[in-house]
Image 1 (spheres, rainbow, N blue to C red):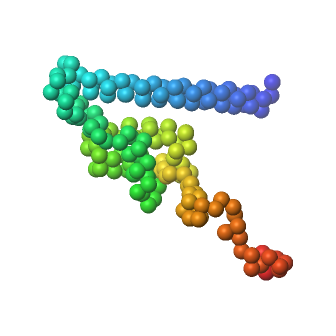
Image 2 (image 1 turned 45 degrees about the horizontal axis):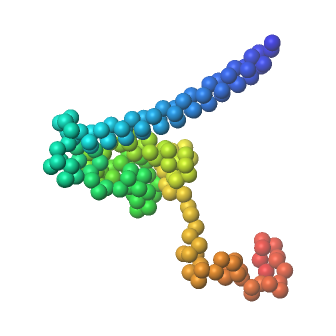
Length: 172
C-alpha cells in the first residue's frame, strides 16, 4: 500500500469519526435540554425548599431556584425578539445579556447558546461566516413589498424599455 493510499484511508476514517461525534453531540445536546427542562419543571413543582408546593405557593407564580419568571416568553421567543430589535448580528452572550436585562436577570448564558444552535440547525437563525454571531434569516414579506395584495410580478416590471434592445452593460 502506498503512502498516499494510507493517508487517504486515514482521512476517510477521521471524517467518519468526526461525523459520528457530531451525531453524538447533537443527541447529547437534545438530552441536555430535556434534562434541563425536567429539572426546571421539578424545581417549579417542588419550590425552592424541595418540599411539595403549598396552596400559597401554587396560587402565586414565583421564580424559584433561578427558574424562568412567570409570564415571560419562551427562550426561543425571547431570542427572536432580541434578534429582531438588533441592528447588527449578535453573539449568544450578547443575546443572553439582553434577555437578562429585559426579562430574566438570573438566566444562564449556556441556555441561550444551546437554543440558538438548535435554532440555527432548524433554519430559524443564520450564523455569520467564521464568527459566533447570529442574525435572523432574511424573509421577504410579500405584503410589505406589495401592499395591494397582488401576487403577480406586474407591479415590479418597468415597461418603459419594452420596445428597446438592451445595449452593453444591460443599458437601453
